[in-house]
Image 1 (cartoon, helix red, strand yellow):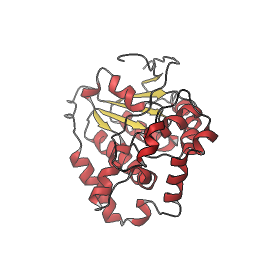
Image 2: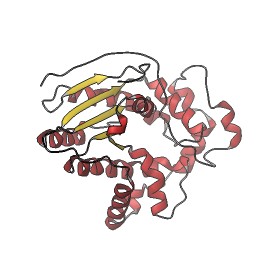
Image 3: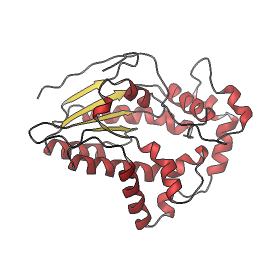
Length: 261
C-alpha cells in the first residue's frame, strides 16, 4: 500500500492540560506567558522549576511503590472509564493513528483539530495520572506528574494493545521516547488488518522547554525542561525510524495551522 507524506513547518502550540489547584504558588502565574521561546537554560533557572525539582528529589515513582495487583486494578479501572467507539465491523479496516511529538509540541491541540477525532477511542496516557492518584487515594499535584509518568505510559500502551484486539479505531498520543513498543503495536495492528498512521508534531528544544514551563505555570503538569528539550530529538528519531516500516500505511508531519486533517 502506498504511503502518503506531507511536510509543513508552522507555529507551535502547547499541549492542552487541565488545571490543577495549588500546582504552583499563585504569584508565579503572573509570568505564565512569555514573548518568545526561552533557552533551555533560562527555563531551568525559573523559580518554579527549581521548586518542583526540589519537591521531587529522592521520591520513587508510582510503579516502584505499587504492587502488581495495584497496577492491574488501575489498568482495568482506566480501561473501563474510557469513552470507547464501537468495534469496526468485519470486512472493514480499523485504523490506529499514533500522534507523536515532544513534550508541549502541541499534540493535544493537533488532535482537537483533526476532522475525524470522534471516530476514534482516544488514549492520552498523561491524562491517566490524576486517575491513578485517585485510585491509590493520593492527592494529585501537577508538580508530582513525573512520579506517575512511567505507570501512565505503561497503562496507555497496554490499553492500546487491548483496544486493537477489540478492533476499535484508536488515536494514541505519545512522546515516543523509544521505537520498540510502537513498532510492536504497529506490527500487531497490521497483522490484525489495521491501517497504521503516524503523525509527527514538530517542535524545537526551546519551544518544548518553554511550552512545558508555561503549561505548568498555568496549572498543568510539570515536566522538567531538560527532559522536555531532550524529547524533541528522541521523538523525531522514532518517527524517522518507523515511517518507512512495512506496517505503516501513512506517515506525515502535521501542519499546525491547518484547521482539519
